[in-house]
Image 1: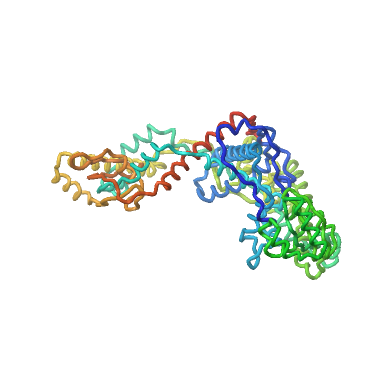
Image 2 (image 1 turned 30 degrees about the vertical axis):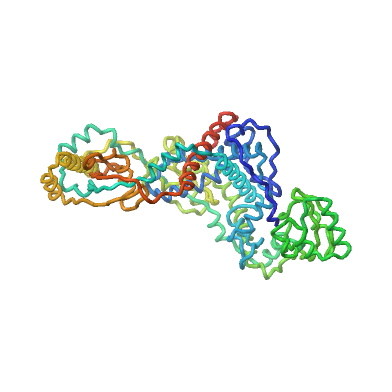
Length: 614
């Protein structure tokens, strides 16, 4: 709505901020954070609570992304690490919000609306669309109030970070040292040896593999495994069985008419002035027939609307700030308001048009009605069926439960406690004492997405020591990689040894025998892409060559080695601008300062994390 009013942020001394007196924190026009949130608290920070619902909203998407990335390598034990990482991030964000309150930083409705309305995702034919905005939020599980609250907090946290950047500085000696390092070039050649290319040159004999197995038997156990039978009840399957007729559909339409009623919209112009005296003078001119468009262009301080006659377009309730909205929705078409005071100043409003909310006709929404009615009926049936499932799970065996409820009895393959393909709740239940040892049905497990499962143990395999034959191939692969890495390390060391005494003949022999060649890079700077970054880092870590070259054998992780011939270094003639280098150092300084401030805030805060609730 209002795009010009901004709270100016100022530089500040980072190390005194924590002791400031608390000042009320205003997020104008923003609804309550996570309305309807769960009552389960997972953390508290100075009486600011984080609910289980808020935590899961962060945790679940990140877990899914990690599972997709790692696939079968994902270990259920990763959950604990991920949970701690996320809850700590959330604590840090709350600390930043509290710090923003102390600094009296806030995101105004103007700033928030400007950001939202400039987002292309919410645009229709190049202009912000309130309908598209609400639709996209609804599809992603947000209400406007919830989304705007999250967005406002992000913007406020960024204000704190930008102020850190403003207050950071660097010493001349630091800048001079960075100049010295950055302006240097080095001339070198290298030979890269990858262990995977030399596996044919090493041999793991059978006795070595057996010795390794005998010494590392504790590493070769087949874990305990189970196979379970289960039945599943889902909303999606129940919905397929719901029958729909026009009478039921029309009755549902009558009961849900408010759902199909469009919001009332109002179109208005406004003039925003922060000085009450001037605002009264402009109002007097308007009451005498003054041209609203011309007066808006001359006096309005809302740069987003002043040059378009002060026009704000059509808007619904919940978009404008409270005082403005209350006035606009109490006016008649063509009416001119008095002065309306808000946190931005004094508004003069002219209401031009009113679009009343309308009930969409039955035929127009019939297809949507069918979906809603089907879901509504399926939800009712699901509630009753889960009650039945819970009773039968306690009273009957799984086969009887499946038969009485007409559900398919399904069986898994064997799986262990770390299996990532099995739902975590099913995994936990399968290895619970009730299922694993007491041979009883599990309780009804809610898996999410309106899916419910009961499972029963079908078979189990105890943990056992693997035989040598089972792991021989795995051991051979591992030992081969070790030997081939040792082999390339040895070649690299021999080349360096011969190079240091000028034995070119021996070097040539080694290189011919192992199909090696020098890669002549020439002169490069630190940011060059003419060689791998890891190799360049090694080159710039070597001592300055005095007479002749500096030869060095370096390891590149577990599977590669490199021989470096550093022959010369010099200062480059292409100087990096001093401001660019200073910005680099300021970035380092502000990041370090930011970390230090978070540490101070944590020390001074009353932080409680309830791990059992995560």
